[in-house]
Image 1 (cartoon, one colour):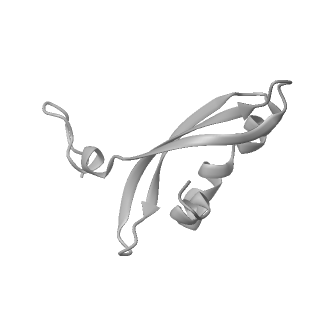
Image 2 (image 1 turned 135 degrees about the vertical axis):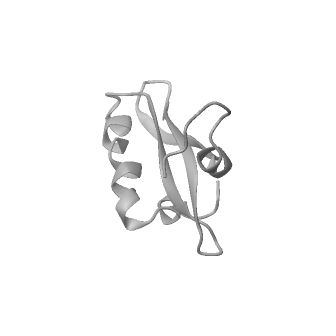
Length: 88
């Protein structure tokens, strides 16, 4: 746990992407999803993260929460792999 709501990471225009599929996780329609988004660093700069979210269910299958992983991919986004074209 980060100790605060992870939605605070996202600028308003990215928040919809971050929360769009959560109702389906909660209902059990899907068990996991992932996305890439921009996020706000403490210093005010913008970075890029990959987010994956997985449904946690109790013994009877009821939703008990969600667990996620956030990976900073800012360098990957800024520095294309060798042989890749950079969009200007």
